[in-house]
Image (tube, rainbow, N blue to C red; front, side, top):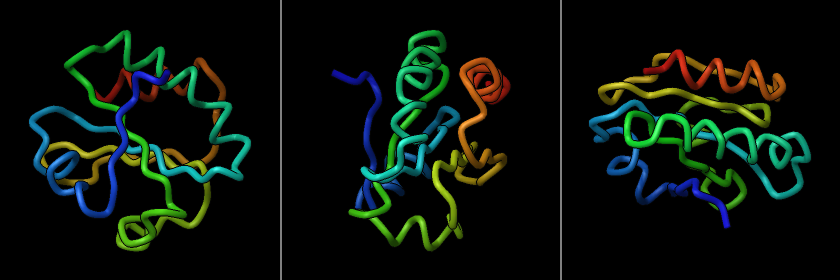
Length: 107
């Protein structure tokens, strides 16, 4: 069972925009193999940072509005939000080390 939360078009404002901690949003789809490959590394990053960083997943097939709003055109895409604003992004699967470094720099 994954330790990552999910967000949706309906809950995005509460889960991400109104969060008091930085949030990494993982835009993914069920057919995206690189998206699936990133999950264990995102889970490890979430474990390492605990409550200081929130990592949430957003399935773009089920929740297209937020992906459209932030112009997510390629998967996987990670967007980082702090104080309700998008502040960073990563497109593609960079591998475990760079992915964990990307998450760590968001603190």
